[in-house]
Amino acid sequence: MAFQLRNQTPTYKWPVVVEPPVDGGQFGKETFDAEFRRLPQDQLREIGERIDNGAIRDDELCRLVLVGWAGIDDAEGEPVPFSEGNMEMMLNVALVASSIVAAWLDSLAKGKRKN
Image (cartoon, rainbow, N blue to C red; front, side, top):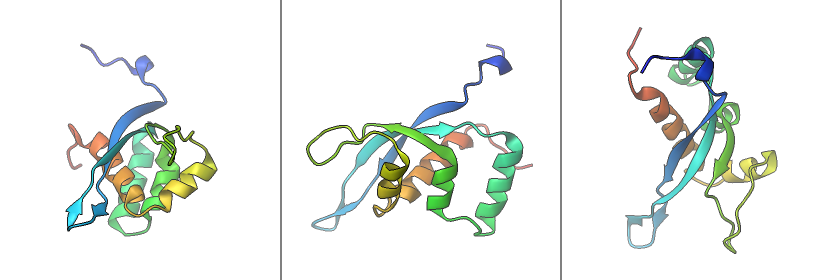
């Protein structure tokens, strides 16, 4: 299939896996789907440089690339809608921001090569 520039959507969905520690020295496994902003190459390069230089925290990167989610429920099992406030609450949960960043980087890794 030929690459069709006009078919590039502004966002895309990608699975995120969070593995929090649980009792007994084990790890749980929870998943949700993140919706990421599709960034232009020059912005990806700039973010990559900031990552390499330690000049961006995981929560900051999440605020740049995360624009939605599905599969996050509250304690009663009700879906938690994406909003700025809910995102801030999620980013304050241990391991969530780093898991989102890992998923975003994974989404960019296929076919990537160093320039």
